[in-house]
Image (cartoon, rainbow, N blue to C red; front, top):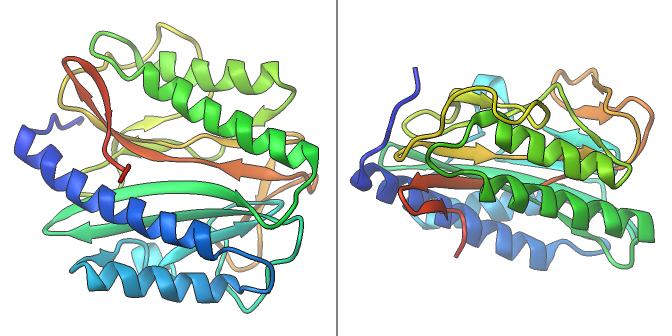
Length: 248
């Protein structure tokens, strides 16, 4: 069942989402050659708690960290570690918080030092996929319009869309209905309505769309070892169109 949120609830989700945005902005500044992803995890948790919030991912279904830190061919749910970032890496960071009973969730992918032209284009196109999908988040549109917008732009640029993982509704639970695939047909699926709040999150691969899960039970990697990028925003649908809540 899809819950339509009141203005008050959207405000509360927005409070959480802006905390996420501030944390990710700081992590983007700190992600540099020689820094470990575990250091970034610890910084994210410290900032989150300083704002009176709880890290949403820590302990969620047994996930043992606060931040998902996925490097290069890692798609999502990468474990922070003592691995030092190196020149040319790309790092996807997914973070969420819980404050006053409401969740916020967002993700970004950053370059570590100078990256290859292919990696740079992957980041650019993946972020464009997110923005294109957000523009479809309007009353009267269909869920498939978001999905199709992501898929068509990614594939037009020679990339592929991860199919194993999807976006989701968000509010009092981290993952609510509806699920939001990043592939599909325009004009299909649930009709979008004012009051829906969606976590829209394209995951785009430079190679094929297939992924596999590592032995830790969490980390997803591209099957062919190609690079992967991930961008996400928490978005409310208003009568005037999309409102991105996870921006500072």
